[in-house]
Length: 336
Image 1 (cartoon, rainbow, N blue to C red):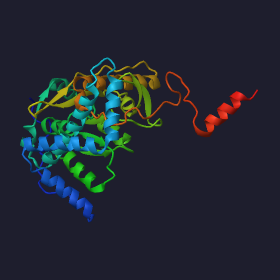
Image 2 (tube, one colour; image 1 turned 180 degrees about the horizontal axis):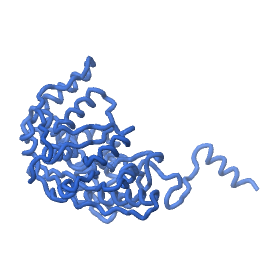
Image 3 (cartoon, rainbow, N blue to C red; image 1 turned 120 degrees about the vertical axis):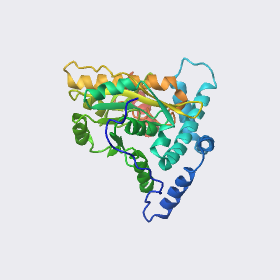
Image 4 (cartoon, rainbow, N blue to C red; image 1 turned 90 degrees about the vertical axis):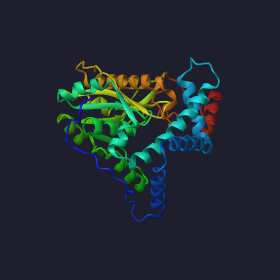
């Protein structure tokens, strides 16, 4: 594996982040810091239990996860499959939370011991050409570890993240994400600095598996259903010389992680910019689907990915009227 391509070192930080004067914030950060002291196997078991507790306390999310799994894998007839995958999804998320707490207290060499890299040559090839890289990924396995691995073993880059509503937790996560000298860009208003970074040959990580609004997204196929997907990555990918490299993390049975870098995607460049952005967004989403299908129990099935509906449903259908609308429809139908 190549040495770090830039001469930057991550400085270990064992102090709890500044949570301000908020008492609840201090309590939460202290708890996270204490959880970070747990041995690795204990932390994984605690995380697994945390995920199961979450699933039990919020049954609406468990039901949503099971519905999403069932709708996404109609070819699997095993009646236990949706519940099994949904349970694995919650357990994986709980373990990720505990791993993040531990990562905050670990040195760079300790963090490197958590993972192995596969397909790294796909990424390094583009790096040697001094091209900007859009790293396409999703909430699979421990996605925060993926960003750290790139910064520690190759070169620091940029991650795009929505600031968390709970400020102390946002401070905590920012410190975790910048452990390897990565820079965090807020989701809103990041287009110009991202384009500048790409033109300078930097790497920008983008999570593209979340629901978004009509204003920001386009509807593309995802597990057989139309999902509103942010078109920003498709727009950025049109920048000359920029490469899109898919990458993802999975947790292995041993507790270690495997981070995989896939070959550069061949983008659609027909000359019709609007259509190209939509077609490439569909390509990115298909790529994410393939990643998730390999390890379905390590994705966030309890996220309401398909909640945004097209203005015109596809295939077109009319919802039956309810309430006063139903009465008016009945009245019009019965009136000559």
